[in-house]
Length: 394
Ligand code: NDP
Image (cartoon, rainbow, N blue to C red; front, side):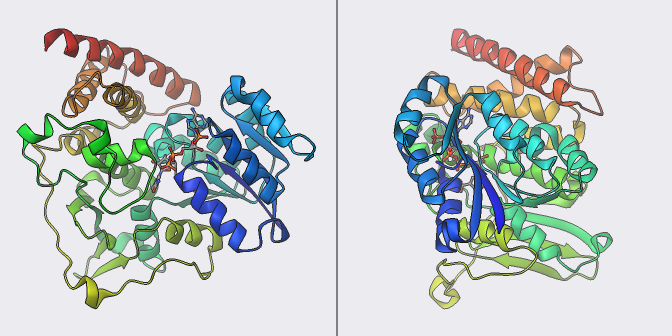
């Protein structure tokens, strides 16, 4: 029986993963090792009971008593804190879903790779902050890293059976989010409630806002570079409002392989769950005649500067991905808290990268986990100062 763990089980990706695991037989088909969450204790306990998990872990110590109460009499262990999440990743499992949001997903992912199983990677921040380290760890322990982000799953699928050296370019698509047609003046007044409402995908709040600002696409550009190893100038972004084509791979003979799929993450999760075979997944089938039209356009770098910043990170590599992600997370926290306007998020990230670059902090080529975590800490401090400077100047 295959053993599985889900990190970030109570989130949007975690729920979709749980749905697929339950449809495929739940505890009759899988031995569930660990499930983790943060604040949603009730749901974490329900899932742990449904999958008969060995252990359920919340990220927050203050939630442990509630989790223990919710699991009383079930025989399922309860634990709390980031160290407990990392320890849960030390428990061997054949298939592990990495779906914690943010840089907090990095350490559990790295620890899970040490068992040589499969890590299904939704947590793109791991690749952005520490791509070379993640790939080297997978190689060292003979583990398999599978992309779960829809664009990267699409590229992975389009590359299957192909000669990598014949690839000329990779195009990942972006829906353009709710503000695709907004002017900069209109964008200045965007509220968190407006930014969280994505037109095509149902996702967690943070990634939804990142999609609206195109910071999500910026992270995905870096993720494409790190995961597949293509040069930055081989990777393009096209705005495709219908969200039907997720990625395209262009080859040296002029042919392009496009991947089409429904806007339902269970396709990419199911692909990673069944890989290397294909298994049935209960997503809606695309009706192209009904969709009728697929359109593509270049993104506007003036209104979405996150893409330009990602290009700088792709060129610099080293610790700049860790700095970029941490600065983005701080800017996002302040936007959600109502302390920073939508457009100022990219200004804060740019200013943070400039400050750290002036201190020569970014140019380390080979990064250890300690260096990545220390840059994450440094960049959060620098970004907080950049937010303060922005507030004082405006
Ligand atoms: P959600 O916000 O919906 O869920 C995040 C999960 O992480 C929840 O289980 C949450 O617990 C938990 N969590 C939150 N903070 C912490 C923390 N500090 N430490 C440990 N666990 C924490 O996110 P999504 O499911 O939308 O996204 C998860 C990851 O997948 C992200 O990296 C995202 O970029 C990526 N992704 C998501 C897609 C989507 O469609 N949603 C598509 C492609 C990639 P709780 O809810 O209990 O508080």
